[in-house]
Structures are given as structure tokens and as C-alpha cells.
Length: 221
Image (tube, rainbow, N blue to C red):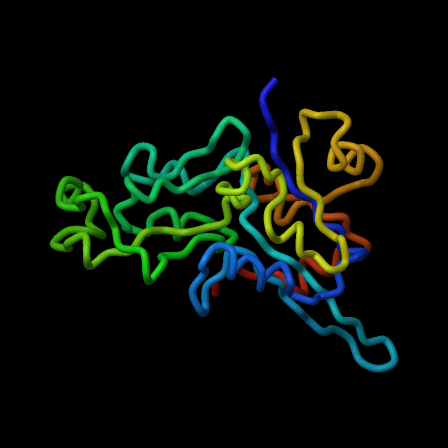
């Protein structure tokens, strides 16, 4: 049986330190103003019943990813057998259709990554790249569970390793002995906007469901 990667964020433990956000930027070279991983901080209510909510956001690695279908280049955006949704930078033409399709705003055009695939081959059918050269376009980027670390045998994305509150859990759900499998079996989890029907693979342990309403919004706004 192959791998089945997923992530759980325990909001009972998240302290809003943003170490996941900062370490992700350093590990993956995420540019200013864009995010692969982000922590929203929202205040609600008034004294003496004021509350502060922390809501870590990340690509949900959906089982039914909305970003794959609109991609005009086969294989530029795809879902691996282990569940990780990937971007092939050698094939991406920077049309941005997948960016618009993601309802979580988890994708962005990386300002420093030039397109390698010749867009003129697709210009007839893809209006977004018509009349543009590769140097005029930028490749899409997103969280991929630190696929370079997974490839090297480190089954721990950098956001997991550096979580100060130990609020993040990552691993193989096909392994009943993995920490994430045991945790998911022992406590109720929720997903972000299940009504989208995309079957997210990022789960949340949620003590207060108001967090989904108060701290909701796109990752890259």
C-alpha cells in the first residue's frame, strides 16, 4: 500500500506564533506578500468576553482539487498517488487559471520564477498567454508539503518541525501506527469549507467553530 499523506492542525495548541509561516518562507523561498503557509489572527467580541482566534492556512491538498481541471497543460498541475498536489515548473505556462480556480487562494504566481515552457505553443487556446513570451510570464507556486524533504526521506515538512506549540501533525494515513492516524482516530476533526466538495486532506481539531467564520478568507489576498 502506498503513502497517503495528510496534515492535522490542533487549534487547541496553536499559539499564533507564526513560526510555520516564517519557516515556510525561508525553506521554500516564498516572496514578500505571498504565502504557502499563513496564520490569520482575528479578534472578536469585547471586554470582558473578547477572544482572539488563530487560524493557520495552507493548501488543502484536496482529493478532488479544483486547480487541476482548468490547467491547459497536462501534467503542469497534478495530484500524486500519495495525495500531494504538485506544480511542475517545467510545464507550467503561467496562465494563472489554477490560481483563480482554487477557492482557498492557496496558489500564486511567483514573481521570481520565470516560465520555462514555451507559451506560444498554447497561445491559440489559452488567451492568458497569447502574445506573451516566456520571460513575460511567471510560474505558479503553492505548498507541496515540502516535497523536496519528502523526496529525501524526511517525512516532516518544515512547518511541522518548527511549530512551537506542537500543534501540527503530518504523516501517512495508510499507516495505522503513524501519529497522525492515531490522532485522527481518537478525536473529531473538521475541514475548512467542506461545502466546496473538494475533500481536503488538511484537518483541524476545532474547539470553537467560530474560527472558520471569523478568520476565514483567502490565503493570498
